Amino acid sequence: MEKTMDFAELEELKAQFNILIEKLEKQTIINEKLIKESMKQKLSYVDRTYKMYKIAIVITTPLLIALLFLYKASLVLCIFATLSQIVEMVLHRREYRKLNTKGLMSLSHIEAVERVVTFKKNFKRNGIVMLIPGIILFIAFIGLVTDYKVEIGTMIFYLIFCLLALTYEFVRSKKMFSKLDEILKQIEELKGE
Image 1 (tube, one colour):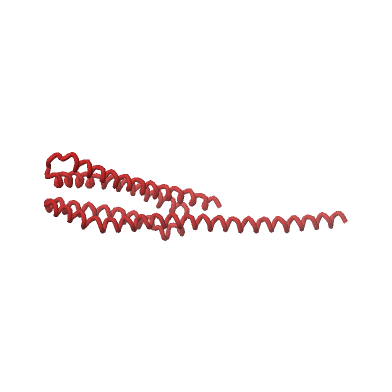
Image 2 (cartoon, helix red, strand yellow):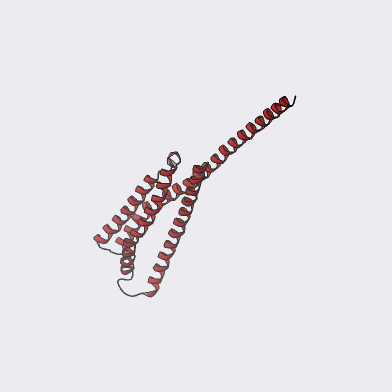
């Protein structure tokens, strides 16, 4: 009698254990879905940032050239401004394509982490590299506007404008890097499950 009771209890424990395992598997699937949905939202932010950036380049390049012509800038300066905008857009486009936000979640964990880390590193490098033509254009533009005379009011106005633009770019990049860091953490969480 005791053996049958032990066997019955063992069967009951086994059934309860199977129910717990099933619940745990469902919970893991739900957690994985939530993490992936969160990653999609963050990657969507990166996509939107890139689209806004492309629109800004498409709008600002002709405006910049028009301003340079308005102030009778040399053709060399206009070509330099255009080329610097094109180079910046090509560099960023290349990095966004390598990141491939649409296909990132289908990659292996190692490859996904590698792409995000590489994107961050190259995005920072490109930003630093593109500061050089930006500074040259800023100095040339102030020279054109002031007719190469020291006009403190005009210089301060353009300096404040550029500082605001740089601050906006810094904040936007910082937010994007924060989203990418969160994606890296979530990739690691998925790897752990």
